[in-house]
Image: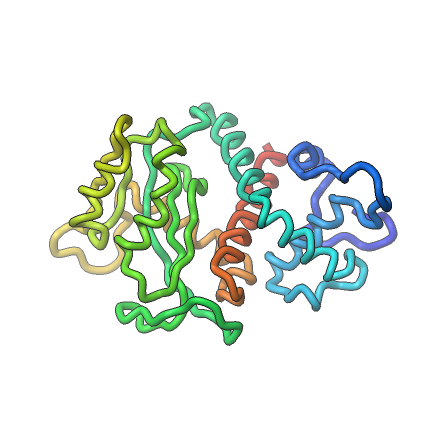
Length: 266
């Protein structure tokens, strides 16, 4: 942290920065020395995501907003946020005595409203909402494996195919997926044929017959809790981004901050 300013709740502690420092791209050799430390750049990004601030409205005692947004976009294009999130997730799983790579996961989607920023959006008739859908795949601890953002009118099973396509080469230990009844049908067959070996099985978790009111369903609650965690970040409460890929990166940033804080506390 910059010693000349008061700290924000979103700032990295010394213990948290010690964990993230090896994962952040190093300063390139040669050329002009950077004016702002990597730690302060991250503090600016975390502030924007947690508080819901636009880049231009970042406090003046953080690095300039153009610098913070530049690094956010540069690292998004290079896949850095996804890589850091993956390393944090693996470390959390190891800390609780689990294999870094999961064998089971949960699939679900969430519809959110969009702002007037534009970009891909649609109307979800079921939720009666104009906006986008966030499709998530999480492990049984609720830790993020994959995320995909589509227009809200995209059906769950089609969004799931976009989300799960990377499983052809990723998470080879994964064998079982849980989902609700909205994913039943052709997606089950598609999932079984996704891999030539290490077959995947999609299993439906349905509501009990005659259910009235809220009931916690087995294996479904971790992903619902993950959606709730994400929406604690005001930048993700509504989708303000022009590009769906930007929202996907912001989801990774939110998860990085939560997992880093959890690891440092333990």
